[in-house]
Image (cartoon, rainbow, N blue to C red; front, side):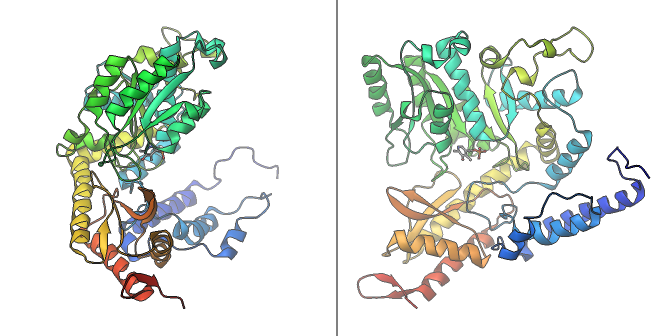
Length: 488
Ligand SMILES: *Cc1c(COP(=O)(O)O)cnc(C)c1O
């Protein structure tokens, strides 16, 4: 029999049954998350199982499903689990999962053309313009994550500063080197974006922060003056709405005023915190974000949309079009037919083929509503305050950074933090009980708890707290002068 050349199943009825089993397994998984460890180390033999040669013949879907359930699912990061608090990662929602399946079935390519899926994406753009108080002429685009969204924001700012001709002449033709500004604690993707934009990460000035880990605006102003005096061209200031290490929010209104005076593009890295606007309690902390020229944000963090769903919002569509639109013949527009409906997403960023990230986002917002999403966000901030209080009452533990949003950095008192905290965190991770992480605050390694997951409860915070103390009990001996690691 000749080999079939289409890739559809020969037996749709059994595929349907198999598909329902897969769906049921994922519902079971989500319903019983708490019964499993947050994370567990990958057995070496299992890694080896994924070093097979390219398969010549296909295998039954049921067997692949079985491999997924036993070999992949149990050894993932665990960010859907309520006691995952290691990094800023969202927990996902069942609606988002189902929407992702619908999007994959449809297999829509959202680069352009006249199709309803683009209206779904435009709906989300309108919602974001509304949420951030941007004008109706704002534009926006789904991208992988905020690393990319920040990069696109920076490219729009660069084109605004140099004019559209710079897209042809390149940065080699710059009259004066461009410089940008951000707090010293800014996410690493901003320096990376400067490098990728050809401006160099050295041209990102790192402004010192105050006691609350916010950019010192007086120093920023002096840095801008000094750079202008030296013949450089300041063009961009990046404010952060929720730093990834401690959750600090820059004085966004203050930055907006300064950016206005100095004619700088004001971009906000809102990857972590921008969606705090969904909560009436959190929104006032972000005051000034509505004055940004562009905002990067992640629906896959506080928005709980399944990965990946980054987004960039630009105050004036013209600026975004000026940075990316190009007149290729095969992308020509027409007043009717499939080539209608300009501008297209491919005019707003570098991607041409793009998936339907908007659908899982639209489903999540429509199914949950702003009120519930906002309440989940506010709840994570309340849990952070609760943990802060428990730490403050403990003689053995101390809070090591101000708690602004949903991140708590703390440590054991009187220990060698560089040695003890990473060991404690790795042991907790391997225990599967809870997943914190470490970061560095004021030159010291601290334990970091980022509460992003909507499933986390105060009982989960208690479990983490007790696990930290239990670790200290078994691993540290009290000596008259300091606690030391027990060497066994
Ligand atoms: C997560 C994060 C980023 C990077 O976003 P990705 O979606 O991981 O690419 C940038 N900045 C901040 C403040 C973040 O929290």
